[in-house]
Image (cartoon, rainbow, N blue to C red; front, side, top):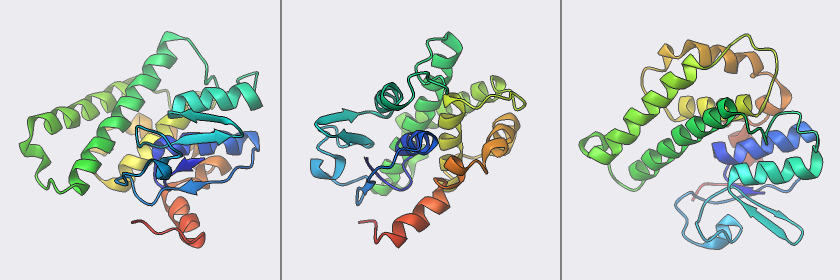
Length: 208
């Protein structure tokens, strides 16, 4: 599995593989700004994650999730392949938030200090706020079942908290409560940002 320690898209797959008890080699890219396709498992789009499984290469996190479920969890206990409108909308909103955040992070790392002065970046930030508000309104903190929607939400939420790119997160109490409910689940705790960085450092990984 090609990814980076803090990639929330990669983390989705790491959590699923942990839940299924599947061992894998984690190939950590040196930087999300690297321009060699070899850093991304030969993904021409220069993005992670990429899964190389024998002779098969699968790109894009949700495609990989469906591939992994088909191979290791045909019953789809977490609803990765759900076609319910509410599940698909939730996934679309969380992915949109995560995509927008990545663009803002890359812009900042690329040297754009004043993102708020650019209309396009203001739109992305506004969409993040709107997405979080929508998600908070569609989250039931007390729902018992743990599913793929929870996995992607947790990855997004803890990534946003780690990078501190989004303000006013205290307003989204339902999301926070839902994430806190599963924070100590082994697959979640072992892949959290701090744990992932510590694991990467122990393996000798250093960001470029």
